[in-house]
Length: 437
Image 1 (cartoon, helix red, strand yellow):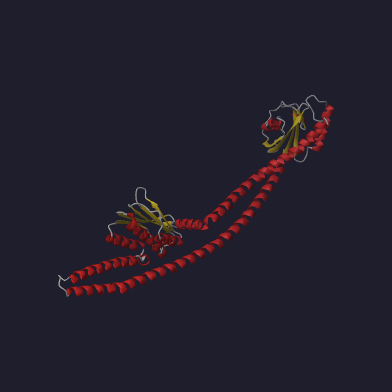
Image 2: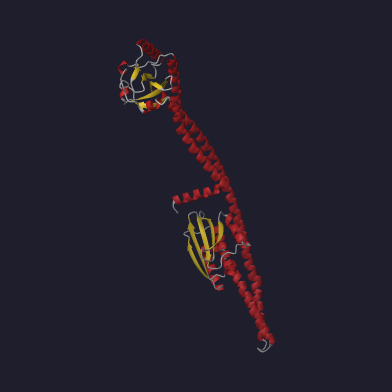
């Protein structure tokens, strides 16, 4: 098996061992990481928008003050008011990050600018200015490619803040524009972004260390419990198989040998009588009965002996089961064994017991003519499938099937019994494929 295949199998085995709550917890952690990264991307952008809105609110308050004092110039305003407004702008706005102040008419004429060359010129409005003409303050970061920015070519980007000037009738009578350098905003947002990712990285680091420690501790616990369960199952199987060997020997020596002596005694007694003697006929009937009992006993002993899949290996044990079944019944049994590696003894015994139980149930209850046994590896599982053409499952789980299920589940496997598509029953048993001899 390739290294990638072993790694994939180990990951799948670990995923199964997590259980439902463990998988939900892991999924929750993954979702938390995704949400955290999304917040790391969203927070700096949100901070940028809030900073622009805050600066817009500051300029809006100043515009409201100028408007209340009647300082905002109009297209036909007097020079004295214009000069007073210009002095206020240069005192309270220009300098620092602010590089330009303009007052526009609704049709795009520059009524005021701290750059005299722009006064009286008409320029097309951009989308941000058009939004402000609807009576809502607007702000955006733009380049200096527009004609209205002919005197700001020394900077790459500007923050444009547009504040609508509202007349007495509620209509927009002009736009107050403040253009600021973007450097301070970028530096502030950069710090917010850096601190945000630092906090996220620290949090994810702590979470990773915590989850790694928890996973490692949980892995140790699961590994210890699995080994304890495997050791217990191994001792149980060994005890069962040892008891099976003892029973085989006991039946052979304590029952089989006396049967032979009984049969020889009956034959010897009958040989001393004439063939017409009624006692001779009775002795002959008793001989047949002893032979029948001996045949039944031998069949059971073969089943018990050849059932030791731990000694024979799964393939050989299934071949013996196939031969015994076809010898003792009219069933035709086909075996398809496609497993490249030998299984460990626990899995071999568990799967053989499942096959033995399925075939026994077919012989007793299914009224079938053919049985198909297939063994193959499917990803992380070794699967044994027993299918017959009989009358289908009864719906009741007997003691043998319940015991087989417990044996399989103890080593991480399972068993399922369903009706076949057309007729008969399909018994599917499986064990983990990660353990081989």
